[in-house]
Each structure stands twice: as C-alpha cells, then as structure tokens.
Length: 268
Image (cartoon, rainbow, N blue to C red):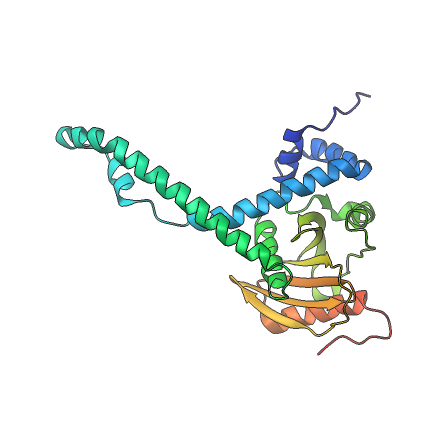
C-alpha cells in the first residue's frame, strides 16, 4: 500500500477551503489528529480566512463603478479612442478604491476583534460562522457524522475540553458532522445539523478562560440568522439557524438538556 505523502501548506489551505478530494481530505485529517503543530497551523489559516471574509465580503456585494461598466461595453471607434485614453486613469481609480475599501474593511474587522471580550460579539461570531459553512453544499464540515467518535475526540483535543455532539433527532435534525473553526483568540468547534427539508442549524462551542455561571438563554438576530446562546461555566454555546424563533428555542432547550448536569433545568 502506497504511503500517504506529507501534508504541505497548500494541502492545509485547500483543506480549510474544502477543496481537497475526499481521499486526500481524510489523509490530511488523520495527520492533523496526530500532529498538534500541524493542527495549530490549520487554525491560523482558518482565522486568517475568517478575517479576510469579514473584511472583504461586503465589498463583493458593491456594484461595479459606472466607469468600469461603461468601459466593458463594445465601443464604437470614437468611443474606443476615448476609453483607451482614459483607461489608465480608470484602472488607477479602481485600484485606489479597492485598496481603500480593503483598508477600511480590515480596520472595521480589527475594531470588532478588539471587542471580543464582550458578550455581544459571541452571537455575531456564531451567526457569521454558521452562514459561512451552512451555505457550503460540498464540504460544510471537516469530519462527517459517520466518524462521530473520531470527530468529537479530535475537537475535544483541540479545545482542551471534553465535547459532546448533542443528538437532535427528536427535533428532526440529524448530525452532518463537525469542524474546527476560528474563535476570537482560541479555536472553537462547530457541529452542523440538517433536517429533511435541508435546513441547517449549527452549534458553536467556545471555551473561555473566565469561569462564570450564566445559564440564561439570550437571543440575537444577526444578518438573517437567529442565535440562541448561553454561557455555562467556562464554555459558551450558540445555536444558530434560519428558523422561526420559537422553533430555534425548542431545539436550544434540547441541546441544553443534553449538555447540562442532570440536576440543572433548561433556562426559560
């Protein structure tokens, strides 16, 4: 049997983007499980990807400058001469707009990261992460549900905290799988679920250094994604999805009931 080749930086970037073949992705996943340093490199790549998307995605929705749209049209002879003369100016203006936009977006992202210690950033982070991966039809997770035991073991090791993937079958949602995701300063875990209508919800788990005992459910609505989140001891949990608020709350109570100690009732 041919030995698997070593994992390169290109492999890690492709793995983070879900671009590897299933066979190669499995090989890289095995290597990540064995090598903490390699897994740390993957976390860095995922954090960079998250920051870049947060900074640049809003600009992808902006309409093209009118000058560029006009320049792309088939020109008449007189118009072609004008475009050729103006083209260097148009290119420079477009480039300047792009770099200014990147700078402003990155500055805004840094301001968000500076507020990472406040509770309000947790649901925003959970909603953004859910929207990012739930829309991925091909590889929304790194490890699929058919390897749940290995998935939970690997994520627990990366977060230095024992994790569980709740069973949400009673709510009509089956486990799709899980992945390591970028947190504010430390990695987080994301468990993805899907129902018969192909609706997806995700449970974001993040470990915090400060140990608190805030178990009340809180609700946030971020960019079309509903989020129920709570802090339990040293862990933050956020259930996200594009569901009606009451339905999402019902699933959140089911999650809480499986993760909380037996003598602790789910919050109202």
